[in-house]
Image (cartoon, rainbow, N blue to C red):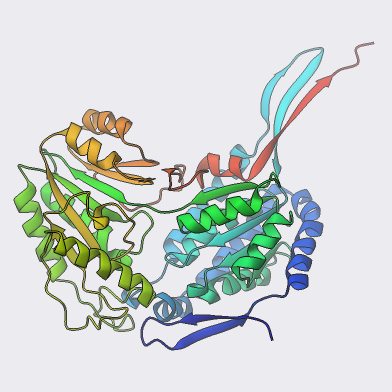
Length: 460
């Protein structure tokens, strides 16, 4: 009997969904079918591929009422937030709008003797390994532009959100995307690595842990298969002395706590200028004390459980270690905190970079706040991290934000906002956050390869 993948609901610890892992032969056959289907898919007019992809997006939207409940059961997001379709649709729609210009030939020059240009050619079969924390939005980041560019796609979703890939593939196929063009698979780690090392794919896009990204790159070693990764994060916020204090508190604390802190670009550490520090901390504590921890199926719940008890255990460990080392925890344990997946959101002060909570990815509802006296000190602290995904700067001075932003080792610099993915900008990171880039015109470049044409005319 084969292995069974089980989604354990964080609400009550029950098995919410289970699926059998594919056999080796089944998995390689799916990849072979995708490869065989790719040339015909790429030969379709771009407008036709766009229409089919957007029809698939709309079909997912039609399921949103069911999707919201499934997400609450699978990973604990409160139903009051309504799912992910707005962002899912925004990202796909933007990539559809820019497809023609992004995939157009790059004209280098033509005269009476030569025509020279560069085409964008789809890789072939794109393998998407998507995470559970924003399961629809993270998947569509690659699925939509990969299909539009003429690739076929195989999607493997996280076990914690086991039903997402299946639902997406069914919706796209029902909308008219051929079955072998977009397929969902259930794989274990060993079979995933075997497929990659066996050249089953032409490009791999992975979103997940640093360890998972290393595993993908090791599996691809020597195959010359491209690998794009978005891995861990420890995103900082910096509140300068001229910041709008109330706006900074509202946005940064929401960025730290929304989705129970389980956001790749969530705010995990905050540096506040000494002139605003006390007021910022006081206001932040009041915001968090107003949260309602509870069952995500209840409409009044504003913060649900973490997706898995082991994630919650890591957050509690980081908090306990920090407090033992001298940090101050400002939020009393909430009644709904069961010592399991339901975790009290926490604000810590008197923290330092000697503490894991300020260095390691927490990926949960905790944030440390430190006092700084200058831009130079804040920049040094923001750069004192193995990760680099986003940084959020709070100031009324655009030039200052650009100057500070230029010195931060990060993929995206925000000014007076945080925790948002703009599909017009490249979503990318540096250091142990990984490499590559999604969405924007650069997303299309990463999902295609350049092919140069140097054509000499016969002139008689």
